[in-house]
Length: 140
Image 1 (spheres, helix red, strand yellow):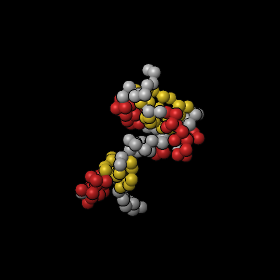
Image 2 (cartoon, rainbow, N blue to C red):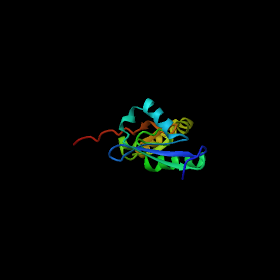
Image 3 (cartoon, rainbow, N blue to C red):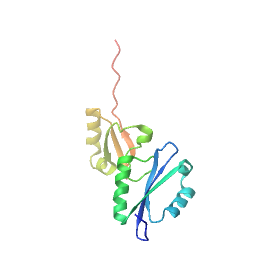
Image 4 (cartoon, one colour):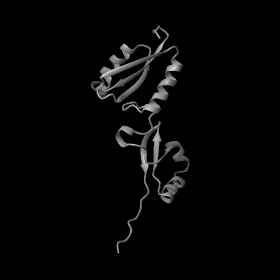
């Protein structure tokens, strides 16, 4: 598709080893890349840029959300619930801070009873991990 003034670009930024660093959307990739260059400390890692054009911004937004969820770019904040690139797969269930605040004692009791850690999130980002305390078994 040839871009026009109404089109929106979905872009992917990769490092030299083809690892996905960032996914975003913009009406003007040249301007957006200049902003990233000035604002993002990770910009120096960018070795390859891919741009895909969509006829509407809403189509580009849906594609961006899907890409972030499925491809887990290293430096995206929006839409990422767990920093897979740093910590591997999430070891526990997730709960928002709002949900936790509704019944904190019940939630803490469940973590203690089940022995299953719980990751509390704020704005879809990990904030706190509740981990049950297990007393060490006595040695014989």
